[in-house]
Image (cartoon, rainbow, N blue to C red; front, top):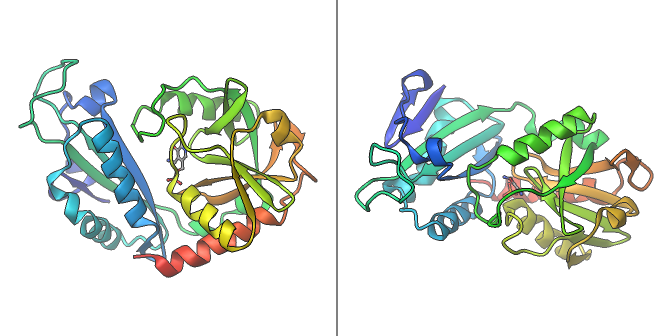
Length: 284
Ligand code: PMP
């Protein structure tokens, strides 16, 4: 695989990052994941805008190659012959060559790394047809979940708790209300109404979320951006998650309780289809 590190395209085995890099020592880094369908990037601009916001929120410098990101994504997709898959991008604050809690000086350049993941058939995953199972867990992450940092240990633990319980993912709950999934935004459906938590520092502002809510409104569905509890979710007609890598994915079970009929409903697959159609059309 060809990867990108600070201006160079390299075979993955030749890629090197300092052991003092702050993303390694302090999780002082931010990332984006952009999906690739038919060799084209989905929602690229949205991911780039969010990356810039994450960098700003952490007073992190923009990498020099910021304006070339589209070209770099395209080059990696081409070099690795990705038809369907993902491009992972990470920016870290770099390092002055030692371990220090204080940020290094302005002349320390950020580290920019990109790599691809090949995922043949990404858009027609069997899970989308049968739906996934979630469990609920307490949300024990930090308070700035709107910044897409590489501190992913608690979400990883949540994923493992889900697997141990025979489920696919975990929905996190704080003060009685669902925040989001380990790596996705969470939704419930009641009749023609789609309910998902309002944007704040408590959740990641999903790029897929923004697109799906726009398409839902265009399709005359009602969107309510508000908090909901697991109890309300378990009584819903349908539920689903969204993310760049799963698009729209139905949820059919919560804490062992079937959602609605326990089968994939009609709203989530419809939104999935609209999202995939429209995003493919707009892909770059
Ligand atoms: N919430 C969290 C915590 C996530 O990690 C992700 C995906 N990285 C999302 C939501 C979904 O965001 P997006 O649609 O931009 O992939």
